[in-house]
Image 1 (cartoon, rainbow, N blue to C red):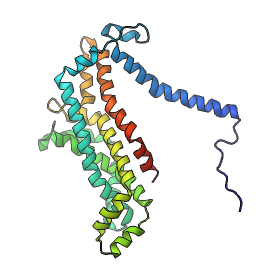
Image 2 (cartoon, rainbow, N blue to C red):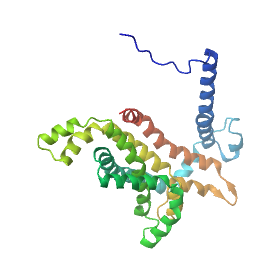
Image 3 (cartoon, rainbow, N blue to C red):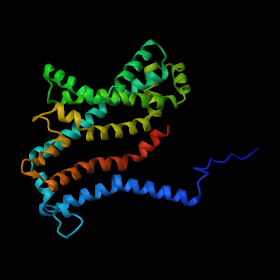
Image 4 (cartoon, rainbow, N blue to C red):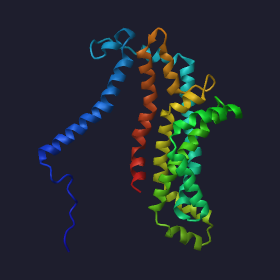
Length: 278
């Protein structure tokens, strides 16, 4: 039996070209992510008089973080952003898991209509929803409230993650579900007892991605909130005043906002990798 060899990556290129491509890719990653984050951290640690030459001098301070934490509105914005991200993740997954399962296992008219609906809504740039959503939340009396901010996030996540969950369930053998139904389980029982446990890595991966997307979202938070429900991505802009930009305080706030997302991505990366490989 002939041995199957793994195809070589870019076989026609000489070794020095591969090394050059790898070095170029590494430089691009550093330029796009590592250097901006390093510069952001340095700016957050410098006094206001040293933000324009952060790469020089030895004067550092933690007073920027202390000053930011003394602002009640910023602390409230952190709490609101974490709560909105968590609630949006929970509500989105409650719908998305069953939605992806339906799209994967059923081929009737309801499944086709639902697939067409989320397909159409997903093809529309969500920036075009903002103005109608603003008027809708105003007319319903939920502008600048948790429901007024949660509903658009949940809608966006359902339209996108339903496709991903369908792909995950397509990769799971349905024979165990059929065996459970033969043993007396209903379709819902087979879904809850067999399909959902098999898709737990995928669900964990989507939970991490959903939380990060909501935590970092800016447009909905800018248009659909005011003074009652401040969000951290919007509150950062309060350091832009008529007197200038307070870069040190803005950088300190950004570093504090980066930390939860970084920790979640760090500890959740194994679930994301496992989930995306199902």
